[in-house]
Image (cartoon, one colour):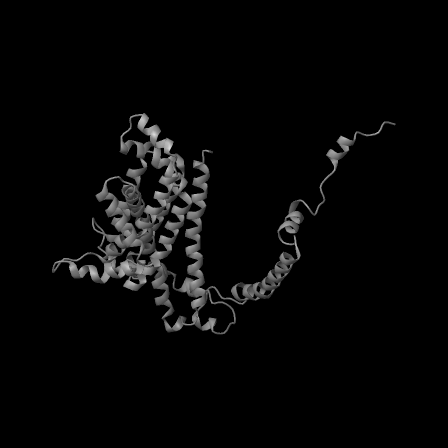
Length: 363
């Protein structure tokens, strides 16, 4: 009987079960030495102590659809504060008989965003579609042309948050790109103005700019001339976010090899053509992760408008908690807001990773 080939025998040998699969990952990452093993055991103990009571409070002993009186008789969470006040939390002081208008406007916004996230829709028709969509949204929110006019002072809740975030992102990014190009310009005046603007804006908090736009700016206007408070807050958010976008884009421009600029010059392209066709597409692709990080921060920073008496979704929730019937349930309300903000921020982050992967062309 011939002896089996040792090479083939080695090929059929499988690694130990403790080195592959789930057990292998656990052994390598959680119990690879005594210190990590101790930390893992302490973490498991902490989860065992905190998760079951939290789950019991949030789901077992909780109430979801009841009045405030029933909530006072339980030990769990009173999630009823959300459905009972959903209309005011989401739509605020918008006239009750017209609240179908901001609902349709938000649905239209989500449809536009969903349509745009598909790269196949990136064509010449995309810009007119967005212009028409934003016009319809503005018509629905403000009124006119057959609809009762609703002043922006009554725009509140989630629609106001989405409006400030959307237009803040859309307006800040092109301005940030122009500022980044201006800071790298060889013209002394443009370079100096860009540097002063970027460093000045980055040196103050957003709260200061919101106060300036809401309180100080009207003092410099001629008597009888006023600007809408929502518009002033929107401009402050755009100007603030653009300064941070500018520095991110400038980093992307510096990361482009010098040969790319020389290649554009060798093709006889002018400055604008070289930036539009060769340099900026590569630079913007590089800075997708930090750019999205800034845009997510800008989305969360819209909650700061509460300090200038704009009733975004955070402010309407705080007003709900001031109702004596619902006092004492701030944990449930703020947890709901945290989940709401997380959904929007996670959606932006997930799309950025998808876009980065789609635009990846290798090295």
